[in-house]
Length: 232
Image 1 (spheres, rainbow, N blue to C red):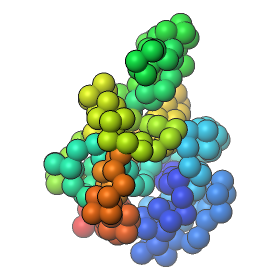
Image 2: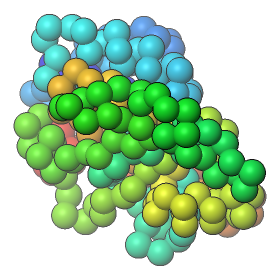
Image 3: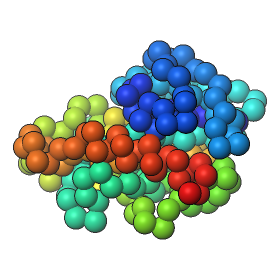
């Protein structure tokens, strides 16, 4: 059984409503079958804490084949990743973990405590992913049209162009979200395959209406999840 998680019911409905997935209360999971696959759906709620709580709990199930995170994201530069386009994460970074410096940067090793040790290596503020291999292990279909993205997970949505530019430069980041790092770390800790699929809803740091398209991103999410599950 594959665990499918989204931060909000709106994202989950966009992803699987076309297949008849039911509305979900936050934190409640439901088994759902589509495209010949058995899925366990859960709306985690927004943010790292909610994501970690539910991912850790669900990954303890003995019948789990992997964890798939779906949702929308902000992008730092509108180029290869345009509004409503689809991407998948090859790395997740938590830029807020560690020792805060005077310039606003964070030294992940500054407090001397790694968050986890996986495969004999400490995990500080980033988890490298294997999306192509993990998708194949889970029997999922990545489109050749979807680029890979370096993702950062933030606790507060980036509200200024200056902050967006700093995150992009400091972490060589493409997109931002609010749950991915916790989900990636939970899966890595369990040794479970993991995939994070995102569609682009906005230019991070912008408040201009023409640099946002949440509705379009949600529509794209449904189309992309349909392909992910069936290859069509």
